[in-house]
Amino acid sequence: MPTTCVIGLLWGDEGKGKIIDLLAGEADWVVRYGGGHNAGHTLVRDGERLVLHLVPSAILREGVRNVIGNGVVVDPFHLRDEIAGLRRRGVVVELGRNLLVAEGAHVILPVHRALDGLSERMRGDAKLGTTGRGIGPAYADRASRAGVRVGDLIRPARLDAALQRLLAEKNAILVACGAEPLDPARLRDELLELGRSLRPAIADVGSLLRDARRRGERILCEGAQGVLLDVDHGTYPFVTSSSASSGGVAVGTGLPPQSLERVVGVVKAYATRVGAGPFPTELDGAFAHRLREAGREYGSTTGRPRRVGWFDAVAARYAAELSGTTEIVMTNLDVLRGMGPLRVARAYQIHGDPRAERVQFPLFDLDDVRPVFEEHQGFDEDLSGMRRWSELPAAARRYVEAVEARLGVPIRTVSVGPGRDQVIRRDSAIPHAPAERLRPAQGSSE
Ligand code: GDP
Image (cartoon, rainbow, N blue to C red; front, side, top):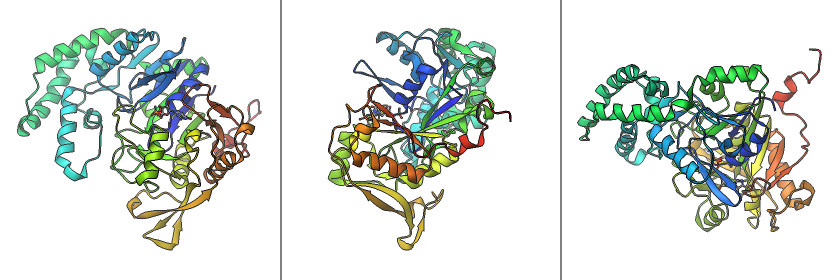
């Protein structure tokens, strides 16, 4: 397997967890490169749902090294509890062996959680809809060079200096807002204790990964959220605070940018979004409810009902281009059973003007667009037991082909249920994605 990255192409929750879990069977390393414990991959093991927030998805795979990269913000209290929870359910987590944490990753402290809540409250109606876990404020402190890093948790003198830097400012804010200031001594003791318990996992993972790559080991990078939530390229300000697109791989792992050879973009057969922000193809009313129920569209981390809508080919094509997606996985095709006729946004109309259609995704003015839909015949068959492309009803195949044609990137895999085996591989009419075409063929003399 070439160095591969799996990303969601829209707003997250595309079912990346399952796809990463599948690909992890061929990987030696699985690496998270961004986001925090607001991400949540759901894996299904022997019919049992296992939700992971910070620990990479290959934790169930024997022989794979799971890495939390430096681009992730780590709440060490949460990480300790997540590891304990996994162990209680019989998952083997051995720090330093199958789980590693980058010493350069930034730490989410209780004060970041407090500030997350405060700033959401202060925004009133302009709330971002964050999960309130302190992720944004921790990234903000990383950028303003006030952060605490995982490596500080095992270096008491450095931790003291970092906490002094951070708490002088944060306690002043908390007090001004009428909240309790933090007790530096208590926090220091707690963090050092967490550092002791996580110590075997804390490593310079960037250099480990570069060495692994030199040895030809197989590295799979796991995206959190989706491309449209990327801090630079997404629907700002309704985005995460990190580089959710494939561009985040180099930043968040320490691997050189050119190491990424394959980008697997995951889309659902329809669209969903959690939290606030523009969503051109959003549905409401009874039909939206039916789709939400059929797809069990409730946040795996927060339980919040997800907003649902038709597939947005304008947004997905933008995300695929931006991230250099070389192949696509379409999940949840089974959920569209009985939902026909099926619609796909092929363009946007701007300011309601039918003459002004565009197929480029706008970074600004997304609130002023109206999707222009094409319609496809629906299907009523249960797809969940089907394993071959030829078994799928013709209407379902045509739907996948229509989306593929709009995106210009091959849809190589279609998923028809939550289980690991509920996938259908297919040969695409589009043989090579542009990024693949640019590379010399294997064994070529170039
Ligand atoms: P992620 O963050 O992208 O991994 O998305 P989630 O963890 O929220 O996964 C979405 C949900 O869809 C999970 O409950 C999966 O088990 C489930 N799922 C994944 N693929 C399929 C599929 O093809 N069909 C159905 N019905 N459910 C799926």
